[in-house]
Amino acid sequence: MPLKNDIKKGLEILTPFLTTHDFELDGFLSGKDLEEDFAIVSFKNERKQFIIDYRFSIGQALYKFDNSIISHPFYINQLGFENKKWHKDFLSDQRLEGFKQILHDFEFVVDDFFRGECNKLKEFAELEKTVTSELDRNILIERTIRFDKIAIEKARQKFRIKAFKICLDTYSLVENVNLLLDLDKKIIEYCKRNL
Image 1 (cartoon, helix red, strand yellow):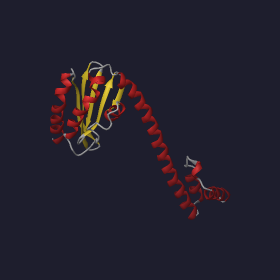
Image 2 (cartoon, rainbow, N blue to C red):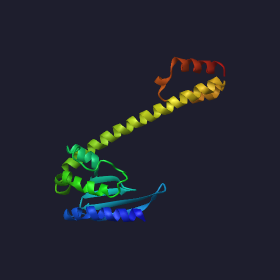
Image 3 (tube, helix red, strand yellow):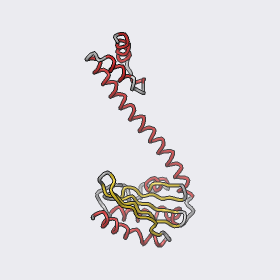
Image 4 (cartoon, rainbow, N blue to C red):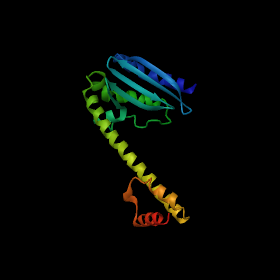
């Protein structure tokens, strides 16, 4: 199986560094997810954990201390090494290159994560949560706006074929009422009068 061979070769790249810092293989989970092979591998040193999610290449690399968890790119960027990190392309087609890049990038987190008390990790993990929550909110807003625009267009189509009840029902699905134009408001009033 290519995944097992790839992950084995990749771990051979990372394991010497991790064991030097007293990290031991803590877990290895593999299987299929939506018809795609995956492996999740974790290394642990007491309260610290390094986790890799591998699909056809590295999907995620995470650093964990107690309940604080942070992604590789966010951690490196917040430490000020955004322009120096090698690993920038998660889920790339360069299967083993990602492991070499992560190994290189360990030098940026060695003082805080591998040797230190993870003070920056804890601080940045909270920041990442806030940023991610804000991003998720923005994605949700964008998604509802997109769905609302589709609903408005469908409602207008139903109005054209005189399906007034369906037209009103479709308009009622619109969450962002500020997207409704004067035309839509007139259509709604017309439908209400003619039901």
